[in-house]
Length: 160
Image (spheres, rainbow, N blue to C red):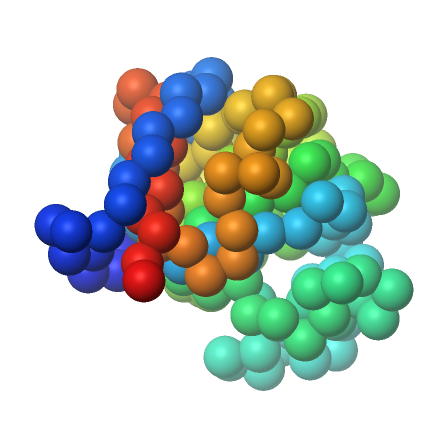
């Protein structure tokens, strides 16, 4: 899901990360500094309801009740089950996934779902790894972000 391009007079900053999965995605940033357990957060009973599949259901996470669909999800890492990849793949297949993901640690649990969605269903999303600590000083929830998974370029638009 691509959001409209921000206006020319918006302030833009560019970061460059490591390409993990190619593609292009843009949308509003949804940022957390807490690792996400995707299996616990998105595999509950409500995940069978269309429109609710992308809503974080982990009551212990700061993103509880936030919908990740169409967002650029910014987070440090995933934690938890080996089922994580399948949860993410299902979100992509059902078109309820983030537009892109920026993470500080793109481990195999996280990446497997996006790769399988791309290979099997042609519906993967870009994943860029950006390890530097300034990530959270540069991207905030609500910023418009473009992620170029071909180059690793992350454009951040501060809209006033």
